[in-house]
Image (cartoon, rainbow, N blue to C red; front, side):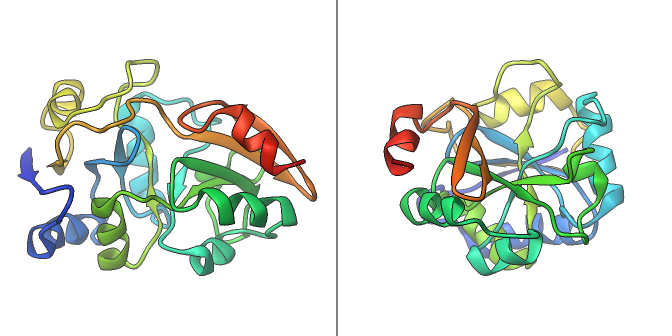
Length: 209
């Protein structure tokens, strides 16, 4: 398994092209986000998504969160964009908030689970932003660990968990938060916090008043 050391504050595009090409060609990488390290693959490639489940030992009925480049891409991936989601997106994106939407028909059931919903985030991590631009596709963002394991905050922890099973690991240094994103389900004009993470519940509640 190859490891690429990337400057998180000024990512080298030429180096990231190697990671982007792996994703475009159906591979799986480990990479840093603004919260923890994630496993990245083309979210629209069902074979690549299936491989992530196998690598993690993840139950097939547990959906996988994804990263999108911008709101326009989010709208392509969702069946609707409720007003409550628009409020949260305007306030917290880009950043560590995952919003769960009704999924577009184009998305695999592996991503959405039986509920046909999809959790999406727009990241403020520069490596993530550049990867999304270079690949042109939404990228999976499930934590880079064996299911039930500790959330990884460094490339070393990702390497320890997966050995040479990944196609590449991007070493962008230790992540700042070490806490996963907050996950919010939006329905019409209301929201339900499914997981409190980097953004406190109180901040979400304040926006929904």
